[in-house]
Amino acid sequence: MTIQQIVKDSRTSMDKGLDAAKREFASVRSGKASPNMLDTIRVEMYGQMMSLNQVAAIAVPEPRTILVTPFDKGQAKAIEKAIRESDLGLEPAHQGGVIRVPLPQMNEQRRKELVKVVHKLAEDGKIAIRHARTHGRDALKKLSGVSEDDVKHAEKDLQKLHDDHIVKIDQLIKAKEAEIMEV
Image (spheres, rainbow, N blue to C red):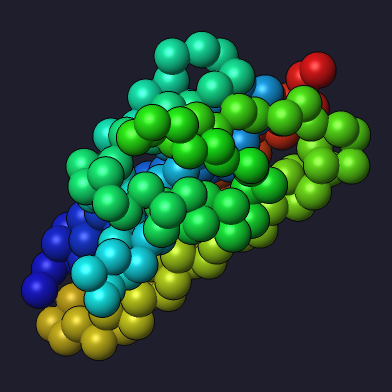
């Protein structure tokens, strides 16, 4: 393995951590409805846990309503139950084969709770980025036949990559926080 390969692998791992944080942020509810809000919901169907988007079509016909159309109409009750029991604070209503999920107005306390959730998700992303950096450093130390200067330069490159990714996550936090707190 070469220094360039280690740095490249570390960058890929850090990018994955950043992408995971973006996906998680998309599932956190802000003022308007989004199909991604229900991505984290898992439904028990046919004896196993499945993602909601695997068992139903999700649409947003209005800014404050999500429409969930189960592929198997007989599983509508299970889907409704999974949405109700999620930590999103939603009250779905089953109407003729489709499930309407109206988004209630968020009060100040709920907004602050969601900001805390965003910070926790961001911390998970930062941890993934730190792990990628640590893994890269360990791989660099195990290299043989490479000068100490080259290893030091590569470690600086890794640190710069790490810092850049952390800054990106911090920017995502600020944007999502502003979106949530917007009335």
